[in-house]
Image (cartoon, rainbow, N blue to C red; front, side, top):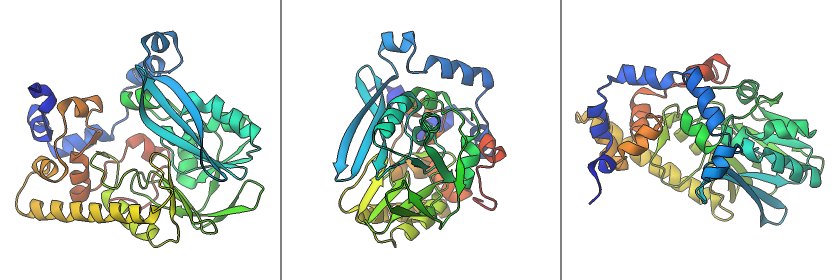
Length: 347
């Protein structure tokens, strides 16, 4: 009884929007039209009278003690009272890893002042991880990140409308760059972590390994054991390479900002790696047999509704995984121009 427009999958979407692969890649690489970016930013600010009255994109944050010594500041936006896409900042030993959503930045800064936090480490530039960084900086917390992430966090990057709705626009912030393989002191209580480049989800992503405690702050390197939807700028092959390096590390606690695993974290990451390798093998096999990219995506990753694809303008879909395997990621132009993509990254 489901209406056809809800059942529509990627193949029907491709028929309805007959864009050649090169045109589609060009479209997804372009920044949002400035006037639409400003309109969406104002509409989904999360604290204006319209959103409060409509109970739409309302900011929400709460604190949870995940384990001894680790607090998670859980942030989300409420849509008609329901939580969507929760993200976490982790407070530990005078430091905070990731800064969550801009709409909860004041609350995060208040908690960091109460707990004596002196440093923040941002895993990557996406607005659900860097949104509160400016609030932390204004509260006297030193903000640190990888070189490319630092470049991007100094800019106000245009967002797709769904990013404004779900997470909000991060404000520019000065950021101290750290190098990959650098050992950094987090806070002033003796906690040290090794910074590792882990691209794939985005070009600038870093993770933080705490070998003494068996922890891995993974940013968005994990997300789920069997992900189906991918952004257009994700590099599938780089994700595989990063995961192979990460599963070789010694850790059991996987502090993923969206789905932390307090036990069996490395096993969960291995499961994701095995799933992605299976998907890659299937894509290359079916492509060699002459299957279209849309048909491959539907076969291996399931159906995607037209409503879902249209909401993100194709930026988040199963089709992106197949396209990335066969032709590489679609870099956003504004990210490249701001110095957010390392030289030689991607294809």
